[in-house]
Image 1: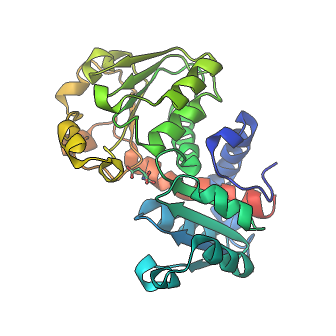
Image 2: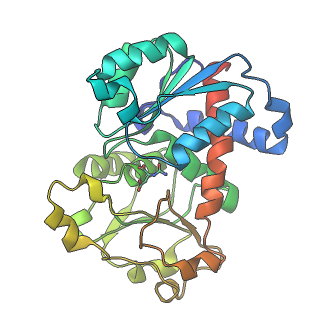
Length: 305
Ligand code: NCD
């Protein structure tokens, strides 16, 4: 049951929750018009304190497609935050205007704090370098649609496993399923953090850490790529050391399975070269498009059950 719930971290979600969302998204994709007024007279507030394109716009599109309305905090520089208003006061106000609040913030824990203050459900649209639960829903839904299942697949996660909230949430979400093998592919400086590693050990997921895609590419059913999270590096020289350290090219995909699915939460910078876009493996734009039905499913389940 998702009705009335806050969505803060993948760790709060069961396999059953994921499956409920997936089934709802399937229904929405089958007959989108059927749902076009289900959230009439409901209001969603979006409060994005960090840059976003897909997440903000797909949440807003999702709400509009369900017949709901959207209010947006707008650019932080133009809101009262620029006058020094604190997060709690902003949230308290949004709570009194809207039926659901979607928040993105630079600081880890911001969404949890918002959920403690607000009575209305709060959805974390990404905070700090740990949690981005709705991205993980979209990622898994895309895999399920394209491969017909999640269980049993061999999955590689490539890139910034240290600071990436999308990569870490994706890995955490995989622990809800019985995947086959997991490869964590990254330069040594960006290896997965201990908390995520512990989740994998606890879940009994077999994983191997490698430095180069070429070592494992032939084995993969899914390759999840990610951007180096430049803005999260405490020291810019640390970023310079890893910048450009992995790039997926046609060449690096030699020997890949025919039905390999390449995903990326986007935005990409230089980690997938453009030549890959025209291969049958490239599914990241399809993944971004599925952000709308998955977020529609989530909003519907949270607001009306
Ligand atoms: C991700 C994010 O913001 O964490 N983007 C997204 O939501 N689609 C990944 C990123 O910024 O690299």
